Length: 570
Image (cartoon, rainbow, N blue to C red; front, side, top):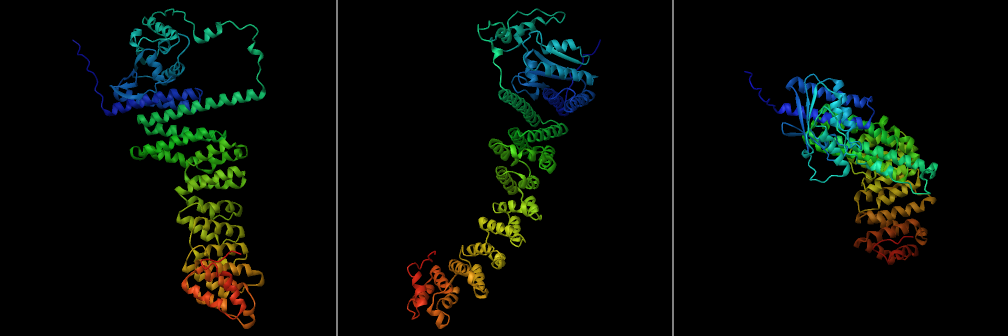
């Protein structure tokens, strides 16, 4: 008497191996929907499925997956969750009454390839009732693959609500319960057949309506866009499936590599909406993987490192002069999701880019530098004046110490233009480093000196007061520098304290007899500075000047006596 065969008991490792088979099955079919069968991606995905099958069959014996409303299950545990939409292979299997898939020991690559082709071919509902997955698998006669299919249409839960075409399809399935012959389904016209049988309206010849060249090109673009969009959505769905089903890391890495190629292609064809969606998906995957999947996290980080390299981003250059406003906006969003390493290649693109693209790239660089300013600072120290002229202002939009140090260093640059931009960036950023900027008071460029003087007078500061006092005492102002002299007094009044009063008092009331009889820029500047100080000691000095017997002194004090809270601008 033969002993009854016991039901195998699978451990957690077996369930994990079955899950790998289910996910690889799904991904292999998805790849075939995007690329020709002989494409490297398709070959790799099928090879991966074969590898997972061999591993399971070799270790645990036959592998049986159950098909139900939720997807594929192994030992009552869901190992692949279907998307519940047309085009999903699990939905197609359930729709055609398949409830079990069994892979037997000895299944070879040729059989695996055939099965994937069948799943791909019939994943969408066919308009031909006899044309379905069950029939195709039966006809393929795969020696190491078995399936279970519903014997009656009652196994399909539709609550009694069927369209005529679904009735036709279900009747065909019912008639195939006897595998020895095929039944003749009820002849219910499909929507396409119904449209073809509709009589033409007399006098209307639709073929006479020809598209113009422009209309044809626009239509082609629309079709191409839809194809790209749908293909990318398939890939995004795959990524979600991998994360959800915890697929093995090797296959995860393969899909990440595929995503790299998709981003490169989207950059090449200026489709930044696709780029944005892919990069957003990977950033989300990165966040999900931070705590649970360190190996996946490493692969995602490598993805962003790769997509941020010069050789990857070089393809963007050819498109800069042909971008529309909407494309530039999408490019800004997409490029902001790259790694900070992208700063250097994007920065070197600035000089050749049109103004609108320059503005976008500057926004992206500032955003990435906010995460890590090192790549930007690295470029800043390169001796490229044209590039520096574009990048230095960006340092004024950051907050990090390293960028502040770079700006301070750049105020000693040999280029007048770079020194000017560095000083402007320091002022925009509100960095307060008067001691480090003091040498610019002797700069050869007048506008740089004037800008620095305004900077020193922008707040009360002992450091700024000390710098200006020293400069006013030591610098020999020429006849063409009266404006600069007056500006220094204005700034001293705004930044100074009572410590400046003795110097200002001497500048207002001092001089020889002749000079006290004539107005001078120095005397008038001292009066304005005392008024700007606004302290009690400064007011007393001005009051004394108003009582002076010398007309030049009285006149200078009288000019500001009506506004002791601050000098009048002249």
